[in-house]
Image 1 (cartoon, rainbow, N blue to C red):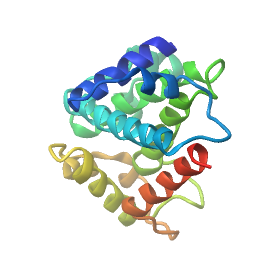
Image 2: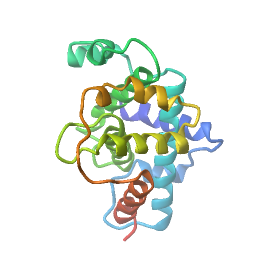
Image 3: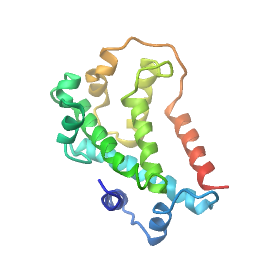
Image 4: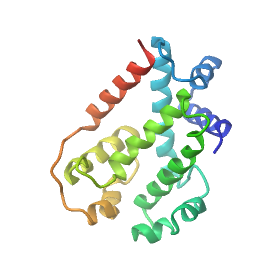
Length: 203
């Protein structure tokens, strides 16, 4: 997905919240991440992150994706149904929306990686991956903590999503034993994430 299409997605995300993307929004989002910025820039960035994350869950709940599902098969050599051993349900809906989001975000990495909107999209992808599609390693959350993070995110952003069935279907819980590790609640995650944005956009 090229930059223009991503900006169209941002506009739809704002419209879903009854808002519009102003010329000032576009100016900030399409600029490189600045060395110094203003409180207004930080507010717009956080507002955009919130709008895009909510829009992500709208797509999940309506079984929509950010790109062609076949792009996943082309990239990884198998469908998500084959990879995860799940034929239908909320986990699969979430997985298709997430993986198309991730793959489409790659189009921004070569020429547009330093743009503010690109950095917001990359941070959303990392956030979702850490909670729902973690890479195995010593810093992976213990299963019980990750379930808590998943429930908290859905409570705040997608209350209609069947998170309990999603957890039951998730192969990440079926195939991994509970690990010891750090605990990071979704509230603290967003506080830290918000501070990181403030650090980037307000100096």
